[in-house]
Image 1 (tube, rainbow, N blue to C red):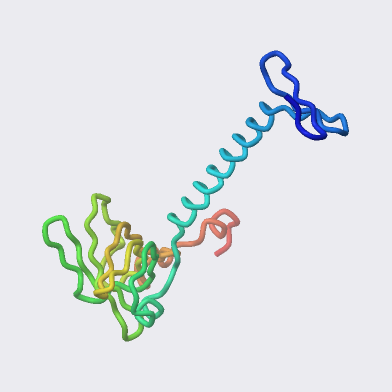
Image 2 (cartoon, rainbow, N blue to C red; image 1 turned 180 degrees about the vertical axis):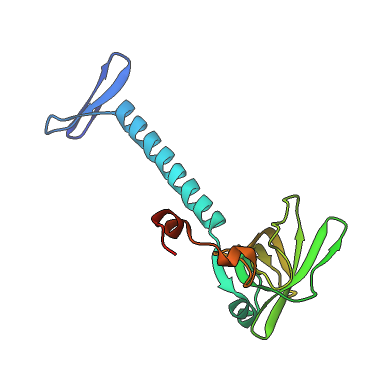
Length: 170
């Protein structure tokens, strides 16, 4: 069985095509190459999809309220409004504020809240912003004080720094 300009021959059960130039093209190698290409394309697509799914944008309360559209996977930073923290059963609700704007936040989770989470604390919440204007938080982080100091006039306020104590400075 022949093709114009090509010779078809059977070699050990596999079909090989001999082109007019004398190069050999094996169908098994082509099938293997196509299979590898498909697998690589699927892996690349899965990686891209996972990246898009887990991507989280950081916005402020002002930026979120200006857009007035529902957003998925958003991280919002602000200050917990005074007197807004309320607990009902396993649900925590509070308002996250910035300047004059605030958004209601609802958190239903099993993670223990940080000790620094209280009225007036800086907080970052991760979750989804709904079209109703409510934020459903999956995770809450409260900012810790970056520098702990003793209150003025207390015993700790008059203590020497460790460097000064070791060097003998007064």
